[in-house]
Image (cartoon, rainbow, N blue to C red; front, side, top):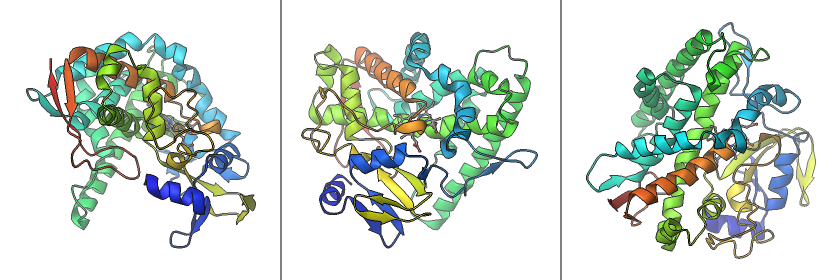
Length: 374
Ligand code: HEM
């Protein structure tokens, strides 16, 4: 998509797509404006995804709700996702990363996506939520199904993956409801207990919160891990990262900018607004292309180049404004630890970069075959 972004940024930075009846924004400035100005642009995309409580009440999660309601849905958990709080948890993340690597099948060739990048975020979020060990396998099955992609473009396989997704949502919802019930006494220190003891949230909202963590956090982090190895191998800097010659954390920031796991976010205009000379009307859907803003030459030197040492790096891969990613500090620690452990364990790791199939909506790869030596 990157050539298209560059072309559009030059020729039509605020563009109305007649076919989709949709605005597309390609520059940093307007993207920033739309994400920050929640009074003019709502995150509640037409309310079509409203969910209901067991007793039928409507509820929404933080990602769909504007201030002032947003604070009630997010405030209770903010502290848990602060970098300081998470740092205490880092040794555990290292252990879990080792465990995931222990489970890799195959002698020295494996699919980095399936065997590592998908498993690690699920394992870590299961632990943070406090999913009991004996239910972990089932939990992983549901998590996989939640993001199941059709095997091919045929109607039957699309239908199958949709059914699997609905089934998983239902299973997961029931399971969270049950755990929330059991943990109302507040004795644990996991996220389910935290949600269960938050009186400002209805039970449906508590379930919604748990589901949101999976939906928002898993594939995105999978794609960050995959895109990182992809970028490092493409630039031939994997060894320089291993030795510390190139700063790992900074290189990961550049991956977030250069191959952003979420390429776009939608908002709906609440009033008529002028953006860069174009008239947006109340009710219009606006797509802010993070992936394009992250390559805007107004903000970045040589934006089309992957520069692992780039600093400062003011990318907006985690969004901007009140909905700024809750899990950003966690995703950063996960990626940092993942490459620390991985490159320490394997003497060499080589990814096969031929015939890669980039995914579109959430940006990553379907698979990335690696050869390793311990
Ligand atoms: C929100 C990106 C990982 C939880 C967001 C948003 C972006 C984003 C762009 C803003 C959505 C919007 O404004 O509409 C990413 C990326 C990740 C990642 C690129 C990985 C590299 C995670 C993880 C978690 C998480 C690991 C949790 C465990 C959330 C939540 C929100 C959110 C709960 C909603 C926040 C709110 O509405 O206040 N994320 N995310 N994310 N993310 Fe992430």
